[in-house]
Length: 362
Ligand code: AMP
Image (tube, rainbow, N blue to C red; front, side):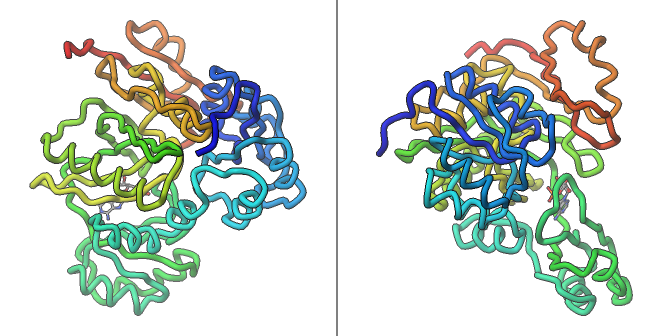
């Protein structure tokens, strides 16, 4: 067990988006400096960090410089090249540990890992041709969600099949870009939830209350706390998240997304080895946000209390939604957070709001 990093230490963050920005803000509150590795100039994170290394995520010279100037390195997205993390790890502590990237970057590897850890997922088949797809669709009764194994996010690279017959697979492999695919059985979920949890260097774990998530067009629209959940389902979600953290010997914050079935059973959809959009509400409704929790974990500080002081709903501001900011800011109980992105393109996450509701009595 190493001592906590003293104030003034430097945290490297790979990735310069809004998650990196919010991590840099939390780091600053705890007296740490931040360096962002991100090729795009003027990125959201670098606007608030001490320094940006403007280079590709796998640029060897930039990685060596990051290792030289930082006391610990973390990342804000799961598609960090694993070789980059491995190059760093011989020179500087990297949290979450790089094997978490390996697991999260490939939907088949991820599901195999989860199933081997005793955690249920949708049934699935690896698909590398139209013939594989036809066979898998037949096994799943013609219903399934075809996804790219790697680099998919916010519903991108996905195709839904309902009642598909033998001919429906024809041409699908080419249409998806001739990359490795996965067919997941269609899950008739009642709702979607997530757990944001953290594990520190000593193995201590804390988890925020489960969040109920609504997606629109594959993009998270809102996160509501408390989620409408049976107590035993909520406990099962926490237990699964803790099992995943322990299995990965994880340090930092993780997001675990679940499907809730009508009988209360849970299937894990995916894991995100980083702070997560469905945890943004914690900055407004908890004393210690997911961002501070992550910084505490990777810097060796004690984890904070994840209790929430308010019920709330977080809503993403996507594309032109950002034009409503002045109106939203005038509403009582609304906490606004914008990401400093210049251009409001369709589907682009520009910010979020958290609507704080009744104070909890207990
Ligand atoms: P993902 O990118 O895997 O998180 O998928 C985006 C969204 O698509 C999920 O949040 C679900 O709403 C929906 N979805 C993904 N996989 C499935 C599935 N196997 N069955 C039903 N809906 C799914």
